[in-house]
Length: 196
Image 1 (cartoon, helix red, strand yellow):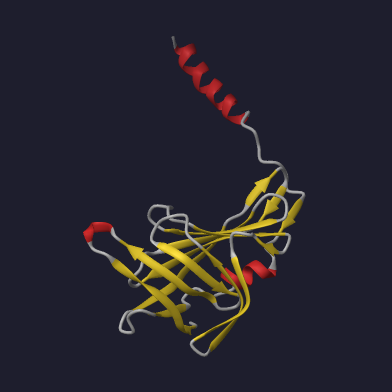
Image 2: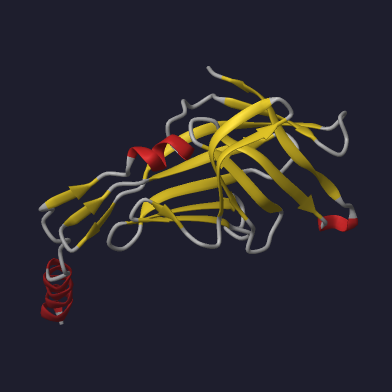
């Protein structure tokens, strides 16, 4: 009887050692400076102050609270990326993942932190923004000119029509939350950035 009890743990240890190992990394691919300039190149503690374009007394503050690496090993190729965590004062907290896709694509996905749903998606293929996005060389909003602006609709959820500018981050978003039977939200425009 003792032999059975000894044999089973030995067999389990042997099987665990046979698991497939990750391939050895032979090549590393970094995010492009282009992608970093839109969403990654900000310090933790940076705050963006927004004003509702429909109600001048309605403000929201969104703070970058954490940047974590998100790297994947795909057949020996290490693809480097990031997940950024944002805390919102009025709208919903959200995360932004900036990762490499297959081949030379870069994907940016903004989603509410709790559910992972309601994503706003940006895609760049070989340096070109995807057709479903709106791109502006420059965009003037209330006497402020933003350059290289991309806009994306939502696939559902509380964030809609998000615009981001190179080196400025998110400059405009529509937020609608109908949960709990109470409608809250706004059409928020960036009015100030506070660096830590």
